[in-house]
Image (cartoon, rainbow, N blue to C red; front, side, top):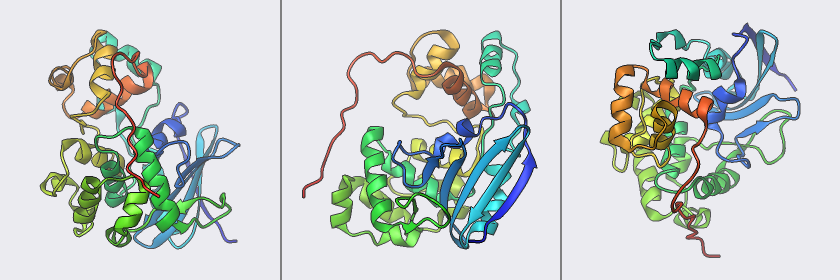
Length: 292
């Protein structure tokens, strides 16, 4: 089996799992795996076709290897996927609290995939539901409609289907996946549009709000300023990290305003350096619409 590879220098503190982990949809994600040696494997449907790419670091270097018809496309963009072109220095750190977060998350970078549809459909599946519910649907639909991943990968790994296939998923399979009609219709409507060049106007599409558009821009474009307003946890994470108390969306936006242009970077610093605050009150329940 032919394998293409690429190697480049990487800042010593960069954590591949932190950068790439935003693409992982649960521990059973068929498109993302962490190998026993610590390397990270992802499958992507590129403009050239399906591909698998793996990232591993040794000292100050990262090596990417790729398989499939999309291998060349993946290797060309591999450094950007792990944030090589990111500019963390653009965040002006003039507050001691933020300085501590930067120190704790040393080397944090924001990567980009340049695959808008892949990020958009995953974000739609995660709209207003628990992670468990969204990941269950993603796992089922990849198993049903995804192509087997190229390369020496576990047999259950799949390449996410292209936009045209998502458009044609049957209603019965949407139901079996646990995705209710509202999200199904949103995916179908978005699949009628070539979104790869329209990441800046996603909210013009039916069913796509600020939260979904922000998560799409974060993953596909590495947007350091995207703010997922309406998130269930983010305001609490930001408020607890920056001022020691839970806040709502409006207060979160006030706290982030001094960092406009780098607001998502601050959010990510809060997530990585401080983690999730202690949960209080009722949790969102996991629903199951499936009937067999």
